[in-house]
Length: 236
Length: 337
Image 1 (cartoon, rainbow over the protein chains, first blue to last red):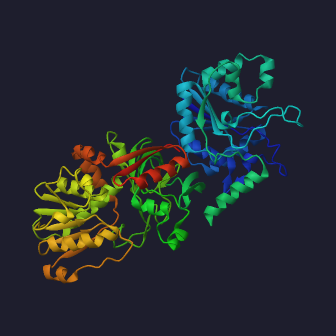
Image 2: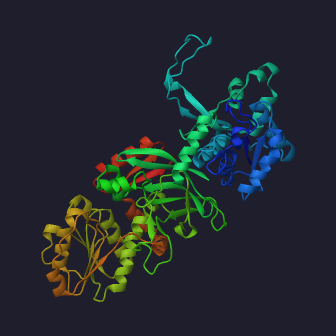
Image 3: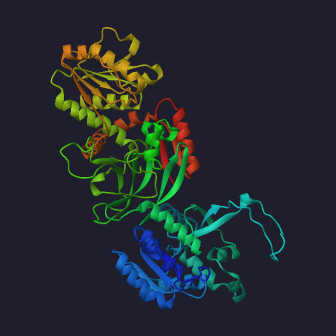
């Protein structure tokens, strides 16, 4: 089976000025998260879409899905976790309890605040996760990356050609991911902020999928304003 | 739903743009596209500046096939291969949709096919079999234009169709001559062109003439596939060589008005018919013709001079540049963006 996990667990501490998590703010004429879910609904290779939200937003999310998405039979809303990896783990546990985990099943994990993800990127993720077991969506770094440990002076300036900016989706063979997560020591778990990092830590290959400059993450108020401005343009 | 569209912002400059599409029709992911001269004229900036100002930014390309992603009514299955019809009627009309003022055309009046997804009304997609050559299928739209003209020709031609003359040794001339050979197997197909190396590819034709060596040849009906400034010379020669009461079927686009020898048109009682674009029944006709005679793919494949993998806007730009310097043939874009 192919599962999508829409990660909407974050409470948007960087958004500022509002109590509503950024995935529930309006972009154009619909909440950001609805735009994101729509991209997965139209892909009929995906069997189930699991939306992971803060506990007190589960009902709200269900209402939004009922209101905006006509074909919502395969969408399930469950509670996310404290961290990104906890949220992914919740989705895997849900899959394990309800469908079981076989050798071939994959999961496409995607930020709910990246509504501009393209059909092509999702398709490429499905292909890469099936073929290689793990993939990450990236675009080449355009700005020079500067490393500073102390936050005051530069430690090093790595060669930009070797650096990419990570986007989402990140997609995995579920069994492989499940086994790797369960093999982590507590110390390892604490330093992991990214699911792909689990694979790297355990010496497993993660393949690159080409992202797109338009696949932006709505993190700051500016991002939402920019995204809305672009959408308003087409409504004029 | 949010959609990403890749538009020509100004000549030689593409940009990503965000659009919204409804999910009320058939959503198609483009897979194989083909560049037309009309796209090239926008890309090179050779259309009048007021036209460019009015129409850009706009996604180019009106020749394309793709795979169905989603159909709200379930008539199409996900993964079905389809050819997309660029001509889009806005309302019912007594005129054919490809000639109506109440139609829009992709890559001309509104966005063409260079986008992540395309939402089309259900009657703007025609299913193609899985075994079709996909690179050739990318330009079924162009083939349908010739098909449409030939269908109209059948309706108006009243004199014998023994000798059918095709002027022009480019893509449309090749396709028109090939379709005539298929649809009128009893007729002699005679091709008139300027470039010997192109004419050599018309091996299926019954006779081939360079335009300066065609004295004494006569034809019953003519198909002009020349266009631009050479239209005048071609039409002059057609009027000279055509038998009385023949039809002249015009396909070539010219940016300039073309003088026509009306005295001889009157004397011979000729009928001149204009042709542009095509509609659903022409696409269906082409798909059926190709199904019945798959050998046509072999001939049509000869037209393909470039196949470009498009993974970025820079690849798209390079494909247009490569197409521009190719004197003959079609450039196919494998759409991976």
